[in-house]
Length: 472
Ligand SMILES: Nc1ncnc2c1ncn2[C@@H]1O[C@H](COP(=O)(O)OP(=O)(O)OP(=O)(O)O)[C@@H](O)[C@H]1O
Image 1: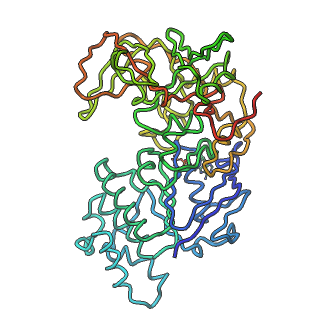
Image 2 (image 1 turned 180 degrees about the vertical axis):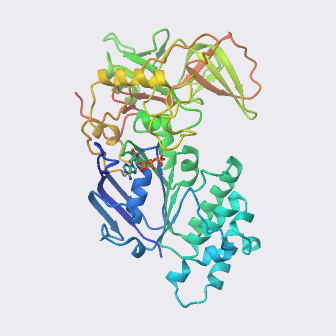
């Protein structure tokens, strides 16, 4: 059995907390779907999961299971199995006993052996059934923990960062196993992670959260290619998208340029629809997003249609084996997004109050950048969250306004880095054998088909959202 889960305008206020941990969160999860809740530390992912499990009360809003109002259903009656980050196994029980333990309550008086053997076969852990947890590796222990969840034949799996205690190789391996298992069983799965790579590889859809508010609900592909706001653009993808402060220049005499301060990108005429819409942004600060594969180092004579030329000075080359990442200084001012690490270079500082050090795409932010973000946030008019996710549909049904929460980017100047530590404002992905040296000025071809523009509130305006925000 598998089931549909609906959250309708669900909020969670913890006692003595001024703002909600989860704010008017709406989501429809189809039977058998694998949905990933993704976001930085503290954004409310686990709270959503725990409300679905019945381990946390819902303050306002509704939870429907297969269309039935279920806010008050006891956890034990929800037929859900949870797998946590800290997979606690009973140390005095063998793997077989650990897996069979929940069945004592679910199938009292029945023979559990066949169910445990079947589970072990699915997970490929027949050989370790008679060992104790102390005799197992971390990966084996996590498999047993999953076995305990699977053996119950739940209608829903709820997984809260189940792989985050494992090393990278094992994580990748078990990630593939989880995908295979849950899809094979056809069981609805809600999976919490702050690791965007994990989310992208596992989810049928990802729900990206920030400060308790749903930012985007879409396929992993759309989250990468059509981020609804600058937060999603910056959170999804490695290396992080290049975000540059810019302005639009569109004189009445014709032509349109994106001005980065020292350099300009000329938009080819006749202007396409997406570029025409940028005229509205003239005179306002914007953020340009360029993924590292949207720019290549090549001579202007090699430019394809839709590519325009700028240049940059090589600051640093990062060899990665299969590719190199070239860090360049284009004389632009990078923009950063609060709650995410500052772009290069930035000391990794764990956010004060965060319960767990963030890694990967998650939560740290350089102290200087944090201070600057606070200063600038104070000076940027805060628009409500309706703009942040209410653009392209994606199934989120629009993001409700959240008084006092500015969802968009704070566009801030990067703290000044010394020449020794400076690593550029633009990262470009190249082949591994690129022959460039620090200090070389190189031509850069920017593919306009992969140019993103976000307005001052952080909402994507190019490519134009399917639902246009009100023209002011
Ligand atoms: N029992 C609680 N009492 C008060 N505040 C809480 C409680 N549990 C969580 N919070 C707060 O609610 C917010 C959301 O927490 P939650 O654990 O849901 O976030 P998360 O995205 O899962 O974070 P992480 O990835 O670090 O686990 C945080 O600010 C957290 O400090």
